[in-house]
Amino acid sequence: MKIALLAALGATVFAASASDAAVNIYVSQAGTSVYAQALGTLDLTGLTKGREGGTGIGAVIRGAGYIITGAAARQQQGYSGFSGFSTFAFGDYTTQYADIGTGDGFSVVLGSELVYVPLGYVSGSAISSDATFNNQTLARLGLNLGDYTLTAGNGDTVSLHVGQAAPAAVPEPASWAMFIGGFGLIGGAMRRRQRTSVRFA
Image (tube, rainbow, N blue to C red):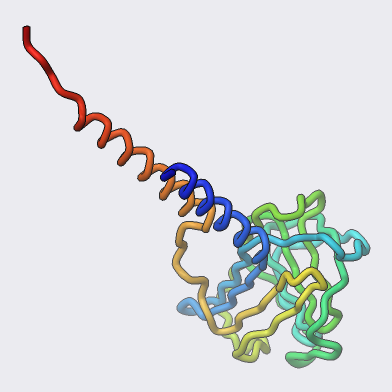
């Protein structure tokens, strides 16, 4: 009975995590630098594949609302099928390149409602990349504080959070299911062990 309940709970948690896919890009002031970080997963179902593109290191192209994270020379694949902004501009079209970037490239172009994922990206897999702009401020990069979101037809979102650092890492729903299942198995094993009696002849 308990195992069935744990299995049902695990299935519920796994289903919730699959339907709530999203990518969040956090751009915040970190001392004398600006730090941008892309985290999450993206379901490509229903999106339209566009052109491939090579990127340099991370960058901000203000007028297009174009934010790029990741290491240099990472190929990306564009996708359309988002809504949220038909026109968008932070300012002029000046490009500011990052000084440091890590991870496979990820980009959002709010003004054109486009998203670029790493070339060969598998739908639903983890996205994690960042870019650091040394000796910069959000204002100098032309980034206005606020939250900006593109929504795909399948319900997934890609959100840009300007002025907000990424939250501290917490276990994903799938990890919680594993923890709960593990604790249940340990508890069951301990109960069985306590019932064991020792007889002496």
